[in-house]
Amino acid sequence: MLTCGGGGSTRANGRRGRWFPGLMAWATGRAFNEGTAVGKMAATLGSSGWWQRWRRRLSAWNGSRMLLLLLLLGCGQGPRQVGAGQTFEYLKREHSLSKPYQGVGTGSSSLWNLMGNAMVMTQYIRLTPDMQSKQGALWNRVPCFLRDWELQVHFKIHGQGKKNLHGDGLAIWYTKDRMQPGPVFGNMDKFVGLGVFVDTYPNEEKQQEAQKRRYSPGVQRVFPYISAMVNNGSLSYDHERDGRPTELGGCTAIVRNLHYDTFLVIRYVKRHLTIMMDIDGKHEWRDCIEVPGVRLPRGYYFGTSSITGDLSDNHDVISLKLFELTVERTPEEEKLHRDVFLPSVDNMKLPEAKSPSWSTLIQRSPRAHGGEESPRYVA
Image (cartoon, rainbow, N blue to C red; front, side):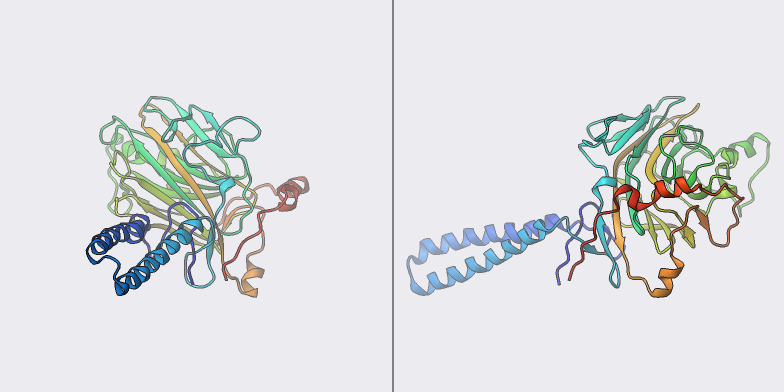
């Protein structure tokens, strides 16, 4: 069975594929060489009967290859199987963003809104320039009601600052509120939802140095550093400690001033949060964070933001691609994976937060927004 992809970067056995050039060479390049050879033989052999029959068979074989190529290219927006079992992914254009950024603006028909110092350029969207005291954000206008999803982020962080003289990083959000400027990488504090942070400046380490104290080897972190946080609106992000008290996990990610593309993927399936990165120029995903038992409500918004202070960097977003993942669930899993109305993490106690009102619950229901696109399956 042939299954086609849904656009954008893909992963197969941990590798982001680059099959298109090879396929074109196979379907067209070799056929061209063979066609040249066929022409030379035809000029030599003339109208020999056996030669004409052999030439027709060869042409039919090349035509079959070209037909297969056209079928592969034509089904580029269909579902793609991405793992063992019945797991497929579909590119959701209403939650995705790529060049030439036609859906970005301030009008009612725009799918994405800019905030602060964010600017649309031809090759990227710059959240903040390499200047002090800037902040910017990019937010999707459409709430996401997908149950299982994967967000692929193509980004670039670069600037003139030398080691530890740059900042502050960027964040990717899936939150209840959007377009709310604040101190957490350009977004509001005490947010409700998920935040993934690419932090480029070690505040805690610098404070330890200023106080003539040193980290013990067991707790030292190397920056830039990726971390994740789930919040029900009751927690503050601790800047002085780089979010350490509330992080779900993290990893070092050397992402500044690289001469190749850098990617981050956030995958949420069956209440299992996985964050991976492709920052080595090898087109391979590398594990960063994996947390089971993460409960995220539906109907929240995707966004990304950045901020600079005394130190600065260019923080650019090249693309955001959201895929709907369709996975099989057992009846037991269906009971366990019912919708929730406040974010939480199993085995992690968050302070009490106010329960949402009935008007909020009705506003957030999928029916109130017309529901989601019906899924398409491959036989």
